Image 1 (cartoon, rainbow, N blue to C red):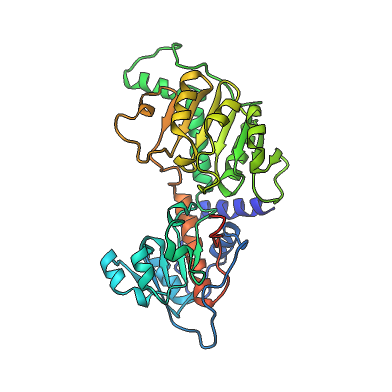
Image 2 (cartoon, rainbow, N blue to C red):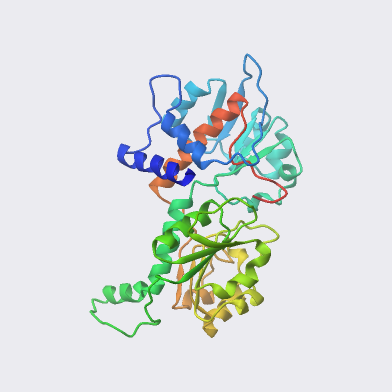
Length: 375
């Protein structure tokens, strides 16, 4: 039901045109708030700052907000002062003013000086780059939240686009088009259909579930892993725990990685994991590069264990000139841009405004990160 409501909200936005946050009355647009609540999770919800009556004035250092977003916030959160356009040094000089900040400001020096800080909002789903910042991770008074649920549709589309580019040899024929050659055959790999193939989604969270939904639409049998015991749609035929990954890998024709980068998932696909796969498996990584051991992946590509790899993320990242991955003909590489789309922007805007409203009102924030678990 939740997925259907989310799809209805997105469908409505698509026909209404660009997301409009400019309104005549002081109430936030119902569709925007409903969309934010559909996207956001209350799993670890926390109040960053308790509010009394009258409400305390709060200050938030924003990376960037549109004029429409600022206009809405002026109506739904009149006690919230938005400070935007700050450079790193200026933000540092004014650190004690901040009660909440965009995560771009959350470096150790700033966090040490920001004695009134109670909330950090990360603009991505992954928070791995912040897990090593001690003043953030060891301060229980600072709530950390992310954009889980925002990027799912675009990233899932991108994952399937890369997979189809390999399974249908689109990369090969695109090169022929540039040469103005109408030439069949002589493809690096046999063209295959996805119908009836097995996809293993490693991490059935917000993004992984979107990938699973699309794979099901292509007639694939979908299995997956997840840490929680949350119910899964009927079309996901088998759900295992992370510890079951090695046992599930031999079933997969396609392995799609959608887990956060944590100490438990770093180097998750190593030599042992690739050995467990059947010959001719396809790999999709739209998560983080360090989840895959790059040397082991290259060996699997050369041996035929992997028929191809779809990589929006790499290790190292950015991928350096001369790296052997560039030369692999059965690899699609994009520069960590899978989440880019107008739908992502609409979802990001809705969630940003709603969390800022909640912050100013003293209500539980959406998408609060468990700092111990790392997501």
